[in-house]
Image (cartoon, rainbow, N blue to C red; front, side):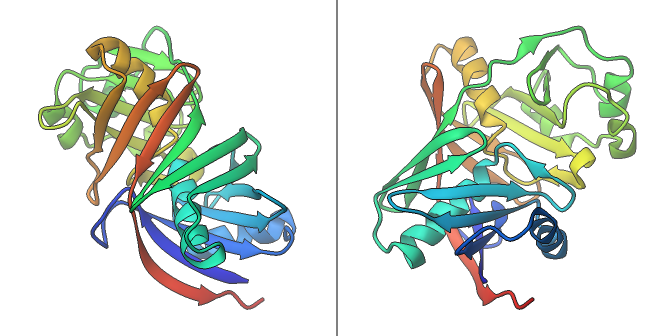
Length: 258
């Protein structure tokens, strides 16, 4: 099968979040897709099947299939617009999270995703100890969503990832604070999925956008993810949907031989 790697949510190479994209005629078995994702050892590998007027899309981490992934959807959109359907301006995916559309304008891809409203909860026991910093507020949707005091606390965070695996709530942990140069900043950790820190997490912005739109009184924002690689995410609140967008940069074109 054809295989690509694209850095998502970045213009320059070697930044953003690298996504593997496999273009196939029909789905391999689930176990084969999981083995390929583990072999690639990127935070996500997307598998794309072309249909009449749309594409089927699935996402795998090195350890599990997931229900939504932003950076691998952006990477898949980039690959389709460059190699599969050159010049495509609108791409439609069918996924376990429903129909996802992507609009392309010049070098930017804006994905239309479902909103995920985080619900406020009491801070789980030992959370502050695991993070190494005091949390201001804690919420829950698919992931734990933790608000910190400042951008510096987010940037300097050094959590105990082994202990983070023991948290009963949430598949991952999103930490966020109001930004200085950008509207808000974040970092995301998924040790339960074999990902210590995800460089730039599009799906996390399904939570971040409604939260910060309410706090800042804005529907159009820019979020910065402060991982070592770093990346920028264009954000729009669209009622029960969110726009999650950014650029991508091609890194690799190859072929997987079974």
